[in-house]
Amino acid sequence: MYTRILIATDGSPLSDQAVESGLSLAALAGASVVALKVVPRYPRSYFEGGAPVDAADAKRVEAQWTAAAQALLEQIKARGEADGVKVRAVVAKSDLIAESVIAAAKKHQCDLIVMASHGRKGLKRLLLGSETQHVLTHSHIPVLVLR
Image (cartoon, rainbow, N blue to C red):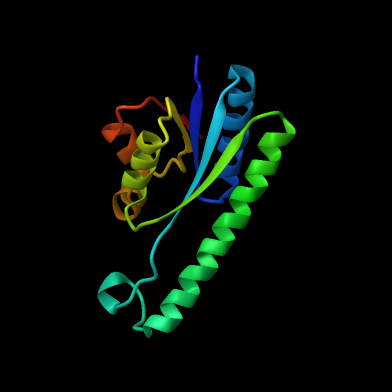
């Protein structure tokens, strides 16, 4: 059925439920897992949504975000391996979340992407965007969305 499943997480409780479902599916299918967390770069100007900071401070914050992402993925790896699922942890650094999910799935030759949707509707969806919707509409790899 599936041989390699990419599970994308943002660390939210809803995403955690998708991780559990993805790991369970992998265990049932005998598939390996690529656990992915995309870390954005720190905004460096008012136009990017942040206060101007010097490069050293931005690098320090980005390093903290990367370390937190790695710790999250190590927890997922431990949970998967406790159920006999081989898990590879991948941190991607990019502001383009959906594109990074699709690129990682292609790079690691995944045959399914599992991710959560926060289910935003109306104006919130328009203003905040939907990375899940973007993955759904642009991926040639099947996507399992959990809510």
